[in-house]
Image (cartoon, rainbow, N blue to C red; front, side):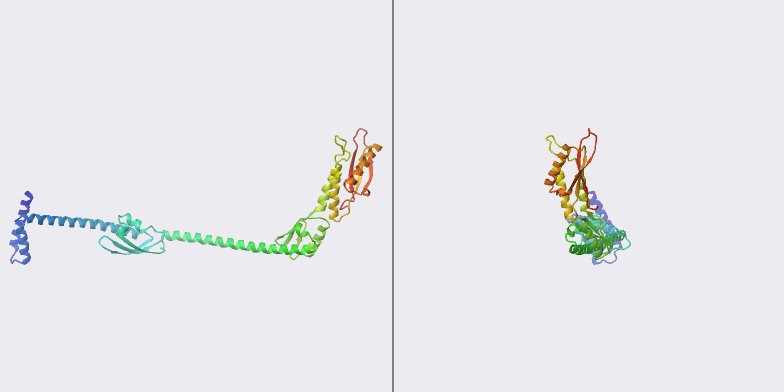
Length: 354
């Protein structure tokens, strides 16, 4: 009630002032006078006041919302423009609550949508048209240059390794062809050498690796000197199987005491020595070398009993080793003390190389 009386007083004062300043009535002044006069009369005046109040509140709320929204947009656009990898070229309205943003964005820069979201501007309120570009004089340009440099160095490394691998493969293939050619050439002169000797190219010469029997070894060495297709052939690494084999077999044949017997009185070493003599004869026969003869060295008294044992040894060796008796020389006795045990050993003569 008090508010109504206050409003009536204000309307009366406004009407009095309007009459004081009005010299000639106009349609607008008449309409305003009627509005003010009518506000005092009838129940419709309250409705009009309520409508005007709501309208004023809406206008005030809209102005407040627009101000806050404009502030959000200004802050968001300023942050976008301050970002080194983002260039904003234009902003235009696309509706009552939506805008379009145009510009450029470096691929390494933050997403523009993330920056707008921090200012309460969602995807439904903006259309982004940011073309991709590579910024200059920015941290992103430095990072991109470092990545490009690393990628370039990696590419150079891969190319260098590929060229090195290709060169190595070509060199190995060429050297392999050269080795096979040389092996085939020597195979024609020394049959069977390719199976036992391998040639390896080393910088400027061949190295022969393997083993051969005599006299094939000597023939191979002679041929290698005259048939080298390139450089020289080093045969110092070849193993003389004849020399190595005969040396080991000779030691095994000459070392045992042939008179040693077991508990049954049987000779212990005769069978093994006979087998070793057969192996030795085969070795020197393959090497085309004269077979050796054997001297019988006896330590003990020259007695009939000892000579009987020696005869038994000679007989069994001749039979088991297919040994011609002519290759067995007469026994040579060396006296020993009567208490010492007698021994019989073989001694090779006319060995290969002697």
